[in-house]
Image (cartoon, rainbow, N blue to C red; front, side, top):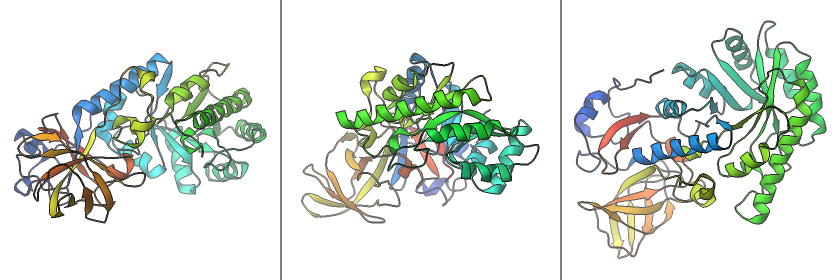
Length: 407
């Protein structure tokens, strides 16, 4: 499948693209060989570094192959069919999404094997999934973590429908998922008893473990949770409906622990990682958690958001023209990393707070009104959702493509 969005015309709906190209197709715009700093872009503007994006896709693909795992990247991070296609081209087995609406977006672009990393309880969505699976128009798998939820699924599934299920495993004070492993057998038996239902495996998300962290206690908690997924799989295995029983976890920040523990599952299985944030990485949150030694090659931050200094009323204080509507701040504030003043140079500082449309920057480095400041982000998911069209740039900031997101 080839994602082709280049005939879409640029207009005011694509934030801060050059005014002169409004009305032109993306294909025509790219042919003009634009540059972020030389082509009258307005600011703020998010960009994706092509070299980092390609590096990250390659690094994770090689890592999964090295540990005998498949990858179903969580594309709710980017909601971009173009990036998803890059991941599939690099060997991803499936795509992961968060709900049926997201599944429909990616199905529209031709992606068929989709994992909804969530329970699905809305009756019309369940019926549609059952029909798509039965007609082989898609292979959609979603979660169940209770007999009550399973009854809702059964009631909404047509007599000739087909539903693929993972049993989700959780932890105390965490998110969804079975807490008591004794319940796993009850759910698995109930799935096996209904010919419309197929048990495809067990799953969980280690990132929801409350004490997960890059310290001895936090990593121990992640190990224990992954062992719980394995134990659940041992219970559920006899009720499987497919030769490839899947044992899966998120693998976003602790993927070396996930691979180590889930790899101990004693029966024939597919080990499946569902990392999402790896594809663009970041400058703060994932950078602090990422186990670089596990891959032998670093993930690289691919997202930068460039903004302009609107005001410098104090020698070390500047007001930037970006805020919460332009850049994520759910985990940490962004950090200044570069300045453009004829050329790109290193720049350091702190973003003390963000308003809706303004950033409050402190820096001992020299800056002036009108300067362009590049910022790195923490947690890519909540920056992508603020941009519909994102320039893909070379390291010299020449624009080589435009990446669409569908939030």
